Image 1 (cartoon, rainbow, N blue to C red):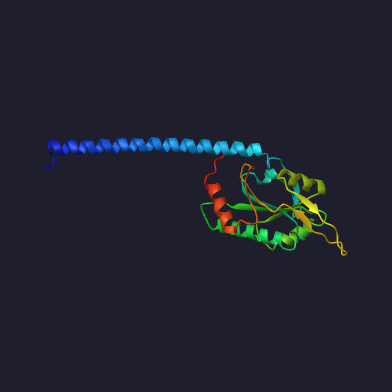
Image 2 (image 1 turned 90 degrees about the horizontal axis):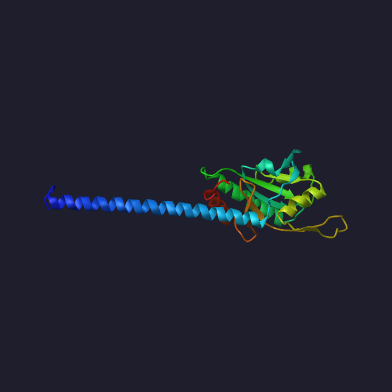
Length: 218
């Protein structure tokens, strides 16, 4: 085919039309896909609102003696765990796992920092000083929270946390049976996900990363 001939021009024209048409279709597909994803995210938000989990507020004292409320953490991604400092093994293991997740996410410069929180379910023994000693063993950003029995119950009730103190032994010591979950809370203060003991630090980090990447501000 001779360059510049009528046949060559027709072929070029067909190719150009095909490219423009294909690009137009791709643009339409991308728009429809984006709209669909936005709609799905909004539906997910409405579903989470209907769950009514973690939608209340709390007012507790942190391990440095400062009053903290849920509003203090709005705008931040939060990983939240309920436990107690006298827990012999499960709580330390879960907080260590939570700390590993935060360290893993911190390595990704594209992600915002995640705030780890620990709320006691044993306020009678876990005062501010006890929490201050305890949180030092985990991630440096970990904040321990305590309060009166009623304040702690209110915070736990909002996340449907079960907690029941067992019988005291001869030394006055006791174990608290409680819900073992790590909760993920969005910057809007909305519960997004939870992770049980079967989830590894790697699995949790992957899940949190996906939630952050797909997050849309309300």
